Amino acid sequence: MNWFEALIIGFVQGISEFLPISSSAHLLIAEKMLGISYHDPTLTFEVWLHFASLLAVFVYFRKELLSLLSNAANYVLKGSSAGKNDFRFVLLLLVSTFITFIAGKLLESALGSGITNFSLIAVALIITGIFLIFIEHGGFRERKGKGDITIRDACWIGVAQAIAVIPGISRAGSTLVGAMMLGLKKEEALRYSFLLSIPIISGLTLLKMTSISSFSGLSAASLTIAFLSAFLFALIGIRWLISMVQNTKLSYFAVYCIILGIFVWITYGSETVTAAGV
Image: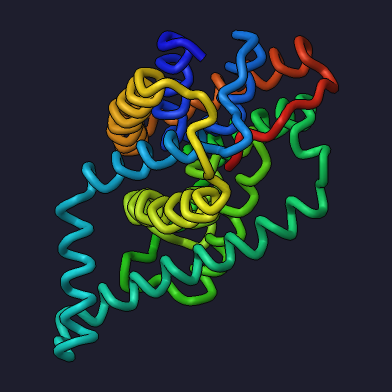
């Protein structure tokens, strides 16, 4: 893989990781269109890209994360009542993450090799587009704030996130729909979705790190360029999604996903590819 291919793959991963358009589908489509593959037996590059995206979330939400974790820690260590809600919120994120891993594994087992069939990816992209229209025009009763989220809500949001194991289903889109169907306010659903990405991406990265044994011939230049590209464009993607949700413009992404899904269906049909990961 040369530096330009690394730049493109880093860009695709970064910009699509937090936008509601499915990063896994875009990586697979990019590979197919460019005739390249960023996969290697040691999973080094895949883990590298996920770590760059994870770092972008930490950087963007650093103040909120520090406050959340600090307050939760004060509640555990000092019994500070002021940190009780933040401690509970952290527990809810962990519950959602646990449910996601269980439900995701069950879904992967059920779908088997068909999970990376381009026709399934095409349908999933179209469904993601419908999700986004649903978010924008679903007429949800937005009545729940941060302190109103229940364990049951956290479990259902975890199930919604697990559906994104299918390339083409957006993690951001599915969690937003799941949260808003449960009555969360749009801003709170968005916040929960972003913060929930931290444990899920961290978990996936740690699991894949156990399979890394070498750099599989990838050059330091390619790794560096891909990392910086994924990191910078992930920051842009986070800011972009927040702006789109606040200004009620998710329909643009919906139209894009539906058109892309139709294109993939017509162009690649029933071809099967190697999975890019959630």
